[in-house]
View 1 (spheres, rainbow, N blue to C red):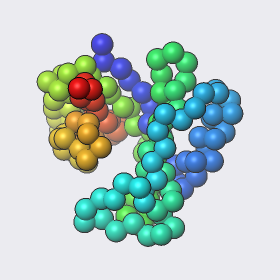
View 2: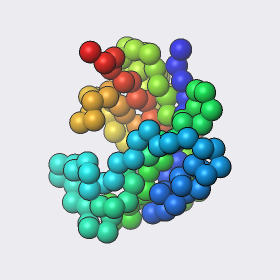
View 3: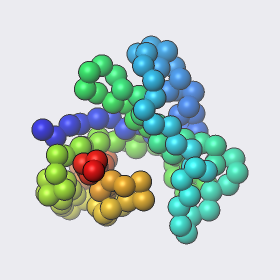
View 4: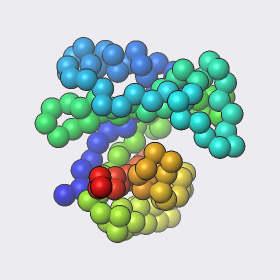
Length: 143
């Protein structure tokens, strides 16, 4: 079954926010990646931005995961009402990921076309025709 998780954007204080959420919900981070730890081709990240959070996830309850990133003004990103949250969809197959991505992004604005990514997942992101931000992420089965 397809799962939905919430993905939050912060203006440089993701780590502080997630340490707070961890103190409330308990548990341990299942992922914490800084921009400096995941170099991107053709993208220059400053030393100051290198320590900011590229991706963090905190399981909450049995089936839910809260995830987030820092918005980087140095890359022209700005935190404004409406882009502070994404809906992250996790389909059970690559075909279902394509179907969901293509259907929801129709007449919208694709930010990152769905494709195999350097971290090993099949991922894409977009804003739908209503201005809602979506991320579709299919994780290949472990071999």
